[in-house]
Image (cartoon, rainbow, N blue to C red; front, side, top):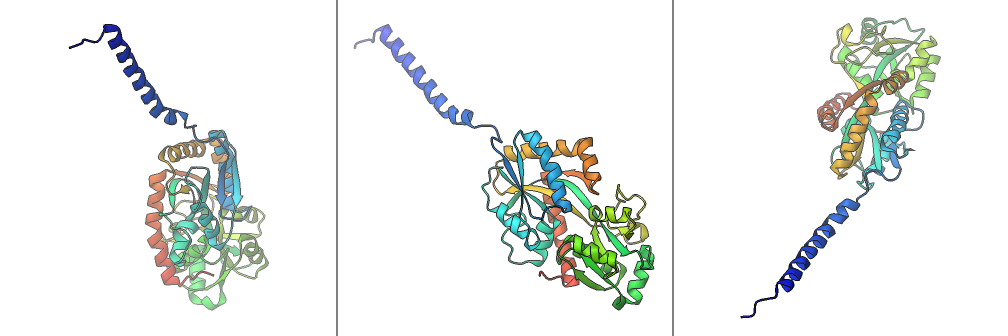
Length: 334
């Protein structure tokens, strides 16, 4: 038997080691070559027209998110069909973290409660990232209506329901659902007058075409400060930080009236976990800053953070409640 020369053995060993190193580097290189997210601008789809309370939140948080991510966050307003147009667009986007959706209760619990053929699924089409804010709603009255509190409102609408109506900023919106929650709580039924947006509803409330309306605190603040309308009560469990003098329905004996509009960031289903975690941490940091809190509160918005798990729980908890409200009030889509 011929024994290999020691130098030949050494060459073979070195060759085997080198081959192993090349193989291991070859498998590691793609992972090492992956650029850190994000490397280009991120689009935030806002399913509302510019200027509304949700759009305001999107722009305030989006501006600060661009600083955290080191890339521009571009606002893409896609209103229509009670937020379904924008939500459907975002649901079909690539799940890579470069298209996000600014959703709300209208998107994830109210639309599914009344629209059986939505072009998206509330949970199946998205990965919730975080709730960043909550917007209180408020029952308003024309300043000439002789009603100034919840007790007087309940007595009047129960005694003469045909005499009164209330405006919302659209059929199937949070103001419509909240209006019906109020009426169910006080045991009355008055006419619902839907408008296409908050601005025309507020105009007619000020002008006396409707005696009451349910709107966001964001929209109500300038009109209340100007003395153009009256505040009856806010619909949240706690008073609004911007309207501390206005009581809640719970304080007036109606604890079942606990409704608001929450704003949630979501990504298309299948977005990688590291990307979602990066976004969740960035949003948590933003909402915790005094500057962001002050900017949101100045718009009548309550800063409130809830991570991915809390966001999923919000949808799962609220969806059956909204279905029950829609069934009792016979809320139908336009």
